[in-house]
Image 1 (cartoon, one colour):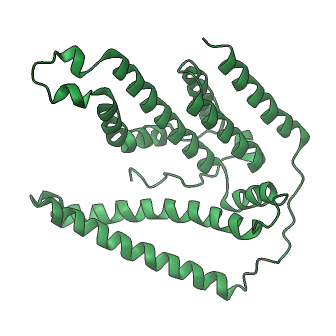
Image 2 (cartoon, helix red, strand yellow):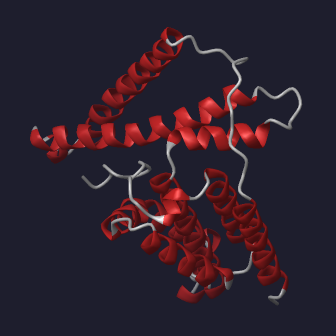
Image 3 (cartoon, one colour):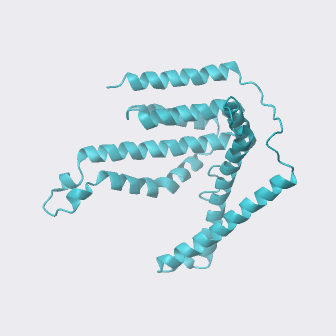
Length: 254
């Protein structure tokens, strides 16, 4: 069950769940943009905000730990790749401080923390926002854009989020089936990868085909009008205030 709740909506009776999807979408985008382009001192602000909203949404803390554990190997590999000076590593006469320079380690730590925080913020967004609300938020944002198929893009965004979460469930199911058949004890890495990738691709294509048939059976059309409720002014101003705060933090740092 390590990935069973990853990127899924978790129903709770909380204020965060009742927020407009546009508030959460643009808030997460603002925080992600701030972490992507800001100095490392912004990270404590983003981390404390994440913990505060996680507690306010009454989400299981075990999900936070499971997400961190699931992404830790990938983030750790990224840290190693960035922390090591590969040019110095190929020279045997180089010292350890030259192979692993402190500035490289600091840069790798900042990049790893940035990536992990962005992943956790994405999990917070998907855990508190329904797919249909995501579709309406994307539709509202794309309506002013000329020549853009807003409804089609909105539907694809919602379906992509749902299918990716479902694929994580399928991946866990396949891995559990492989362990039950002692497939994880195979010493052939090619065989272990093949027994996971092939069933996962088969399930992915099957779900994509089933989704397309379901849309066709329900008479999906791009020209059907969808009513989107107005964005509450208080939540809109809160997003503007968040962007102003992050911009002030970024400009106020050396």
